[in-house]
Image (cartoon, helix red, strand yellow):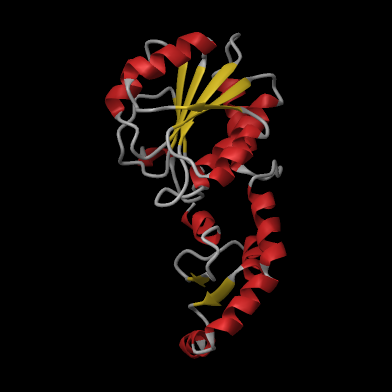
Length: 231
């Protein structure tokens, strides 16, 4: 998420891979081609990093520009429907466990500086898989940069939300005859989830932090190390 908006700041980016939570090998190769990657576990880590940062800034910008085509490929990869993505698995689970006759889903997420692109990118993967199963998807957005807005509008309906207020969201839900209300937002309040539950069939939350309280029918956490007991 934060990696995404950091890259789109157009400033050279250094990523330090740490042994406690290393990058997956195939993804690491893509990162290495796209940005400046250093491995903290390597013997000469500090020397290599110091030598790189000691270069003239113009040299670093030249190297950064040469990696541009790989950065574009990286974002295409992240927002695709790769068969191994959690989005495809999550879509199948929703269809198996939460299937209803109504076929409309609303995604509530935001993206951009200080938020990151990750919330929108991962909901797009899920939405594309739901769309394949004839579920019409809408994106309810309060904050969004131009890149993400363009990406959403390419395949889905974009609805601007002024505030996270129940009355405003309820009108949209009723108008669209929404069945699934899918939330990928760290600051969406529990009390609002509870109120919305009375006007939709299913509330689904995409979450990374198990300590946060939710009023939901299904919680999706794509972290490999997460276990059901954490919730």
